Image (cartoon, rainbow over all chains, first blue to last red; front, side, top):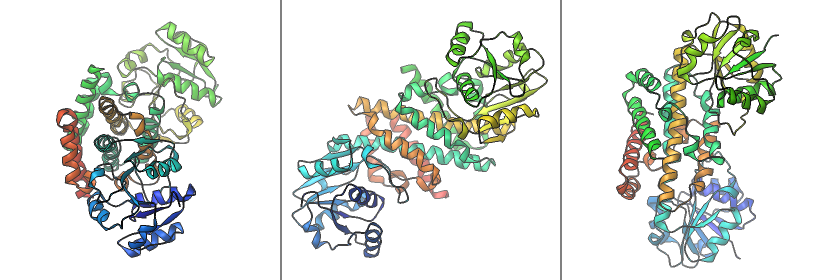
Length: 249
Length: 249
């Protein structure tokens, strides 16, 4: 039964992948989770079976979608037979304790409450087992062969544009709330900043006081931030970095 | 003729506003620019007249959409009569040399090549002249009365979420290009990171190695970045800041 897949894990990635496979008409053997309650709950939510560790042997591909630290240990528990892949950006394929290893790394951030369109999500695969590519191509139009070290670099860049940007949003939200202003006012700007990149490179999209080296505005912003040394430090670092980056273009 | 407006300036904000006013059926008297060629070009593009400084007197509202440094000087040249507003996040209303001042600050980033949907863009207005609010409400559903100091704080937060995030995109793009990887692979992630905020707060949306305090991944990322001290520094600062921020939640 080509394409028959099982999922190990009950977190956001497990949910997102199970949802995408179901939508693509791929037969899902079941979901296994060490926390039986959670596995049962997720399986129910998706109209799937919660299965035992032993029965993973009856799948073509087992996808380990657990936290990075648990991947190696979990891979040891999986019965021989299926191709075993993990979904992590930072764990080497060779860490998997299996004779049919692979990687299936979707380059996206997943939340339980959001269903994302998988067809546009890049899936970075690794390994020689053809089942991995077949599976990936059934849910995404963007499947890339990426070896472990390159995948780690992609993950690092993903951390920068996702976690670090989101931290800027968090800092801005905290700041505005403290000043009695509404963070929601920034949402159209945040969307447009992201959407622009479909049409132009980030270097072309850059605007603002640092890009213009507008010292008056920079000085005033730092003055406004004088009682918030952490934010002032971030502001200074970015301003200097934007100016230095501009000179190298 | 209520709502009749002229625009001074030929940059991205001038273009975006003229386009939005036209779309909303507002009669635009014309566009004035010190650079006559540019003013003529922009006017043609929008099917409008390029007008003289003197004839600005025949508008109800004159919108100064020039760079921050030129606003005060330009405001002195405008003949008496119309309400005179600027579109800047960082210039105080009281800097305008006019007896009918106002502010008309759209909280968005504008590029010549992109037409944005103005109805969702917050417009921060200031001043007692009723024409300003009437005009703003004709193009946007989100009109806010924001005094100068609060507007500067919004602008500062906008710099953080727009310019600083975009700088992270630029740094990630440079890094991936140098590593032979394609920055475009990150675009779905960048979009989703922004879009998530329509549903959850940035603090709830945060994920990643710093949030999890995953020292193994953090160490490996810093190791990968050992030949790029500037990026390694940014990585360290964000990681520390995300960890500290998480402890305060």
